[in-house]
Image (cartoon, rainbow, N blue to C red; front, side):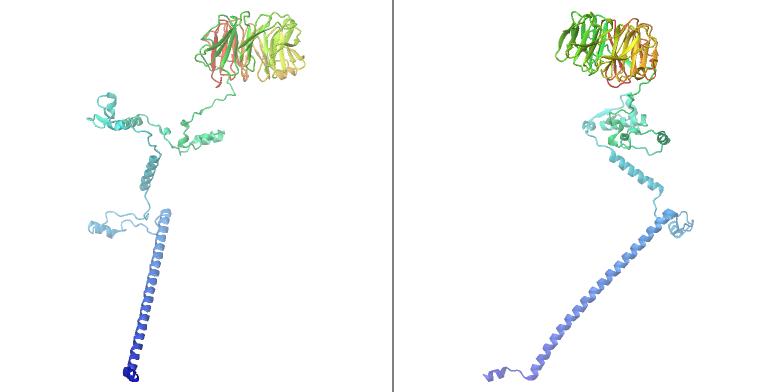
Length: 568
């Protein structure tokens, strides 16, 4: 065993050599690894330096560009500070190279340092405006495909020859024909820029300052109006007439189809009145018929006719609530027609009374009381609901006319003694009595809708207009005396806003005057010069003032439109 081991053992010198070789290999490997790591570090350092150098160059370039930009802006604002122009010397060498070394024939002005010229700015602005116009132009909703296929000969028609672009041109397409027509229209009708969408005027107008100084205020809806809110796309009035003030002088009106044209009366018209809805008109007269017409100003068709066999109608009127019609004549009784039930009732004679005529009466504004003129100065008060006599009032003279005031709480009356009585219907007593100035026999009375004014007419044709508060306070002088009529005043009527007073006498032709209350002057165009009113007997204004109906002795009801008032 020992022999075998001893045979394989190396000599000492060989062992030392093997050890040295192993150590050299290890050192060699270690040195190669160190060399590789050093080379890697050198590479990273070179890249870092390169990046730093590039970053410095970029920063330097940015600083140069910023400096150039600052110089350009300063040159633009203050002129060429950094590159003054020396005419004839700048870029002379370049120019000589171009022209072959000769003297400079032209030079390039670089003083603006790249600033855009005025012409370039205008061109750019024009391009922007054209682009905006194209943006504003709306696409057609519908396009006719046949326009492209259609061919039109513009040489055959004389008025179309002007559309030719060449003398021998004849056939054009439909779309080309449309575009040429539009161009021709624009050529013949210039100045329609106001109709362009989105157009706004930036020019200053001296009128704007004057409007501000005068206190004129533009309606907010029309300030800074956009294309979609064009003033022409609204149905609002541009100029709104004031409905509160009626001007004196001339009353603008127009004659419409007669209100009873579909069925005229066979006798004189004694009463006309509009219903509270302004669409229904009542006409009644001595032919014993109550006629109802629907007023539209064009045809005015008849709605219904009621025949009262034993009563020629002297007066008929609606209750203010519009539910009934009261009709009376020279009879001991009167009639009530219920519009809802279409029922006619005959009422009377009144209990305890012997009046043979109930032709003169008035209805209170609250529709609660009907006041009839009785015999020997008596005034009969009848309930509109039960149609029973609820009280009487007694004047010193005969009673001829009545008028309610203060929402039906007060009643005015006048008659043969020339006095005007004021009655309180709550106590049934007269709380004021005074002489109507210059009146001997009072024949007509009327109060304004608000009760502030009242008019009193007499048999001499004189109409006195009083302020009711002053009259009750002791002032006997009227604020206006109307002397335009020469015969007995039979009818007085204020319109809904008390700006017009109608004065009528049925004893003379065309004896009708319309008075402008704010100025107390008569309208000069009434009665109309070219129209014969015959003998006017009654008149009424529609609730809104837009219509005026006039009944005459010939059985006709004339209908007029008053242009100042918008609503009927």
